[in-house]
Image (cartoon, rainbow, N blue to C red; front, side, top):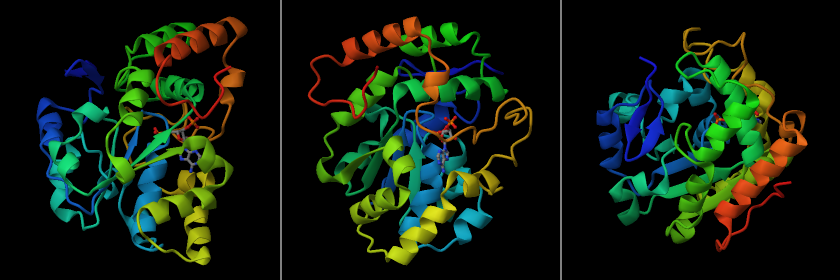
Length: 285
Ligand code: A3P
């Protein structure tokens, strides 16, 4: 069915998410060496699924060439995790779109690390709009205007962007969380990889950093069958309607928002983040 799943007030995708998988995720037993790549959807999740194993294993390409991304670095909240968990080798890498409050209890008592990637919400929305067009299991997004209203109201998968960001920016994980932006990764991937590998306590040579950057480029990932979703049946993801690896750029919102939409979007997001103790890394207008 294409009915979204509701969980603790949150809308979740109608495939690969069940009450069972969500409960399983909340009670997941986190290991000290686990690493979570966390995102609001369309902020660079699949990119992290490529990066994390390579940083953790010192640049060995085997996993990204032989294991599909959803089994290589499974989503915490999806049904697949329970099926592959025994095959994951420590240090394990996972991704998640969960808001902070839904993370497993054992995360808080463990030494596991989290990398939270944020992307300019205007580009997130554009990316999500095209994803809704190509993903057969998601509702048609309607017009850009209609989709924008849904996005701002949080009537989209995983809820409001501002709630997600607030929850994670205020997370009490001390030095176990690294905040990074999609924009930094696009601007200078080797530099972002140095931050990630330092954070994960890996001392990678410059040669290894360059090698990983090459294999995690938009072009290489788009060509990697184990990452580009070409193994997914067309009824779920139709690359003729829009490719999952669509553009991979910063600022595509400029080709989509008119002046009025921009003003409304900016004022809603600003208002919702007013008075917060953190600021956004990009200008919204
Ligand atoms: P666009 O639709 O703007 O192209 P997620 O994995 O969270 O669903 O995010 C998908 C977005 O990340 C898409 O954005 C996709 O193109 C982009 N992306 C994935 N891998 C990338 C890479 N290696 N470099 C740049 N962008 C990448």
